Amino acid sequence: MKKLILILAVFSTSCSSGIYNRAPLKSYLETETLVVNYQGAFVRTLEKKNIKDDTLHFDFTYWGGWKDSKFYSSSDTIFITNNGVEQEFIYWTSEGDTIVLDIYKQFNPGTYDDDYKAGNKGKVNVVIPQVYELANVMVALADNAQSNWVKEDTEYHKRVLAYFAPYKSHPAIEKLKAKLSAGSYLNIRENSAAYVFDGQRIVKSGTYAGFRARDQFKKLLPLIQDFAIASNFLSFYQNEKPLYEKLESLEHERAQVKEAWDWLQNQFPGKVDSYRIIMSPLAGASHSIRLFENNNFKENIIFMSAPTLISKDSVSESIGDALALRRAFTEIDHNYVNPISDSYADAINDAMADVGKWNTKGSYNSPYETFNEYMTWAVFGLYVYDRFGEGDYQKVMRQPIDFMENNRGFVKFQSFNKHLLDLFLKYDGKKKVPELYPEMLEWVKKENYSS
View 1 (cartoon, rainbow, N blue to C red):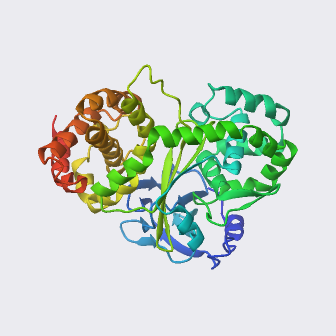
View 2 (cartoon, rainbow, N blue to C red):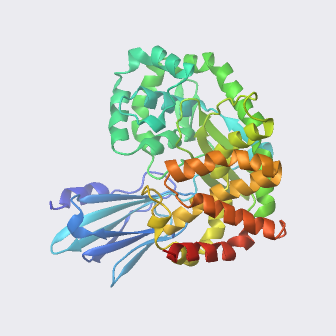
């Protein structure tokens, strides 16, 4: 393993945010085995003998608030806290070799002034932002983009490829391809939504500092700026504006997020002041959500694909609405489900200890993450039953059950979903979802330890 004198010199600079500008902290752990607890959500064990890199990067993104993390061994623990320092380093040593653990933290990425609060309280905003669409266009031009990143079977995608074909070899695309290969797709796509056009210039939004820790979009910004000007991106965006507005209206009309929002706030103690759905007609199936809180204002932010028109000739209007909503709902309710799960974290880890029985595809491979995926999708089932009735429920839930079990590998979802609904009906709606957790976890534990 190489010595790290040069690397340490490079990384010992101060933070660049201008907000948290104290010098990075340095800590030391000497052990062969190191355990990482990621913001209380899941745990990973690192064996030094299996690591070939001199530096490991850990990015702690602000999801629904800050939660402390820790790196620990049998003899020592280092806590990662909201201490005003964005970047810290742990030097992990044993037998003369050192690995640098480069830790980047995101504290409060949204700032809501009084004007923003007054203009957005109680609203669901659906937007296709300019810089966000620019990032999606550039990903679509990269020939190493994965299939689930880009929705290709549309006339819009064809127009994008035709218009931007002369700029496919621009240096910005080449640099982007390298970033995509390094695993930065979601970081670049989502952080782009923290930027806006000021004339032809791309500048930071006055509201959002960023959406994922260690902003990779910013690192490409000079080249992205040049690409936008060279390709006259804003002209393309303006020409496509009727499509964007149609998709925004369609999302409002079919998904009916406000109704789901009201239902969730009746079921759960958590309250939200506004919703912002950020989407692109190019975005594939990679969805995610944030809950930002600042200045006594909470905003639920959802990154998702644009809607697909569901034919009213083939399904009833209520079923079409439910299917359209599912895309957003199973992201939205993470911000209601996860805080409840946090208070049952130990019970979840115990009840779903043999996570391989519940999740066969390897993603979300901790009990906590797996349980939350089960619960958020099953809560969608409760909403469908409560709002549309049993007949439509049976028709709507075929698709989520099939998708969860056969596509995602959550192989017990049908029985999990049925048991949660049975509990909900048992109490005739008099018990809210958080009150069903103890009995739900009893059932999960029994299933987990059965043959």
